[in-house]
Structures are given as structure tokens and as C-alpha cells.
Image (cartoon, rainbow, N blue to C red):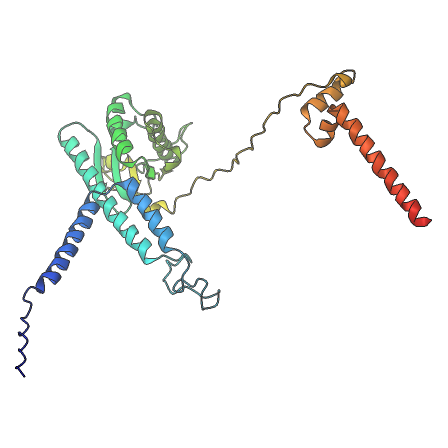
Length: 335
């Protein structure tokens, strides 16, 4: 017998690393796509995505204590926010991402206002970003006369520029307008104290913005702080001048949740369809006007039967025959 040929030794595949390398490149590409998408995020689409993700991840499961092997009264193991309302990791992720997005928008708007101030396009305005959100400070001396709450006409162009900026960037945000005064008491027929004066000035700014631009009225809030929150010592004229101000605050979302919300108590009224009047037959023309109107506007089996005299007579004959047959049947049983 001939010798069997030895199988050729299998060569080691030196290109297996390409599989891992291809997976790594794919994941790296996906990572950069997500980062680019986050940098180019659209606020409206982001809100839609957030709501969709919350609905998708908030369905009952075993982890969340929904119906399953455990008892229906099982508690969720997810931490709550201290108010009894559970916050899922997905919601926390989107809230943090939204907060970072808002922070970038506030800083960008603050830079734009600062550049406009440097170029003499805006006067009497200072801007900053703090814990509350974007704060636009309107100095009292440029916008109001002493002891008055009417906006000076010279300040209209400045407020128009501020209004355009807010309307284009933050018309869906909650905006709080805060009025502040110095510690010098005021007593007049219109303003018995600094509280009324500060609140009236904040309301004047809101009225101007609402009348000039397409803002949602329910998003605004007017607050009068009087002289309770100074930003400089009231011992000097320069300090009192700084304290007399109106601040437009674009609130962060975490403070928006604490603001009262608009509730629509008006329920939509059901539409009542008007039925066309049907002409009466000739045999009912001699009835009263009230009976005519009732028969014309009423659409019931009884009225339809009355309107059709032939059907009425046929139905009467049928009922009489049925009654006669029943009586005969009863007589037959007794016999």
C-alpha cells in the first residue's frame, strides 16, 4: 500500500487583527457622529427626543416595581429626588445635557450683548450669567425718571434690541423681570413705598416686550424687591445708582419647574348639529304652528310615524290583528 500523503500544515491567519480593528473604527466613528450631533443640537427636536426617550424608558418593568413576579405593591429601587417623584437615569442624563446646552447658550448671548455694548449699540445695560440664569441689568437712570415707572422714550431703541434678542433665542423660556430700588423712602399717590415702585417698573418692561414682540404672556413674571437686594452700598450716590435697576432674568429649567403653570379651565363645548326641517305631509297641514315646529325639528321614531300617515294606518291595522289573534288564542285555551 502506498503511503498516505501528509496534510499540509495549516498556516496561522495573520490578518485576524483586521476584525478587531474594523470594530474599533466603527465605534470610533459612531462616537464622533454622536458628539457632532450634540454640538449641532436643535432645541425643539431635543425636547421631542427627550419626551420620546422618557416614554420609552418609563414603561413598567420588574426593576421599576411594575407588574411581574413580585407583588404589585413593590417599590422602585431607583432613587427619587426627595419629593416623592422618581427620576430615572435616562431623565437625569437628559436634564444634565439640557443644562449644559443652556449654559452654552447663556454664555453666547452674554458675549453678544457685551460686544454690542462695546460697539456703543447698547447703553445702560450690563449682563452676566449666574445661578438663576441669564441676567440682563437695565440701569435705572437711562430707562426711568426718578420716582416714576414709565419707560423713557429714549430707551425704546435699546429695549427693542433686547426684545429681538430674547424673542429669537428664548421665547419659549420662563423670563422673570425683577425691579430694584435704593433705600431712600418714597411716598406718593401712585407709589406709597419702594415695593410698589419696583414692581411697577418690572411690569412696565414686561408690557413693552409683550406689546412689541410675540412673547407668550404666561412665560413672564414681574417681581418687586424694593431695596431688599442691593448690589452696592447705599451710603454713596454711586452705590444707590447701581441699586436702582431692573433685571431681566432668563431662568434655568431647574427653576422653571417651581414657577406656577397655566391651567386651562375652559372645556371645549360639544358641537350641536342643526337638523334641517322636514316638510310635513298634506294630511298634517291643518295642525297648530307649535305642533308643526315640533314635528319638523324632531327626529324620533314616533314623529316619523306620525308624519307618514300611511305607515301610521298600516301599523295600527297590524297591531289590531295581533291583538285579535291573541284574544282568539286565549279563548281556545279556555275551551
